Image 1: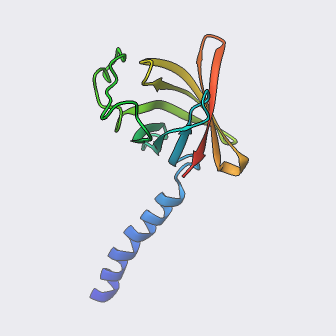
Image 2: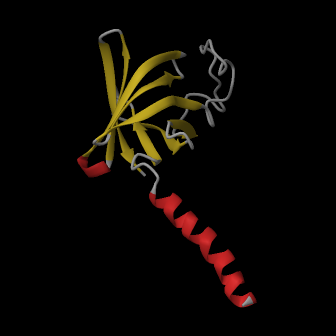
Length: 146
């Protein structure tokens, strides 16, 4: 009886972890950002899903930064003068269905500007089209899954 109870206590949390792992949104993971102007890789962003379903993205690595350990000098919010590596740049994104996401914002650290943002999985989920908009003017980049 004790072995059966012990097995149950071990099996139930393992099943819960397995269900939680499969429940993650397809956009969750690491993405290589590609500069839309130069076509060069810029950083690695890790997108995570909160318990409430919203998505956020954090820069986990800068590729060839212009200076060592750069900070967001031009930011005007809570990220001002904080290190760019480790910085949350995507906030409040929500799944719209069909691999599309909206309702969030994205920060462009080199400008310090926050834009309304949309994202869409493309090429079978191997790429992510990310756009930032002010009014009706939008700019987009295509990121690559890592």
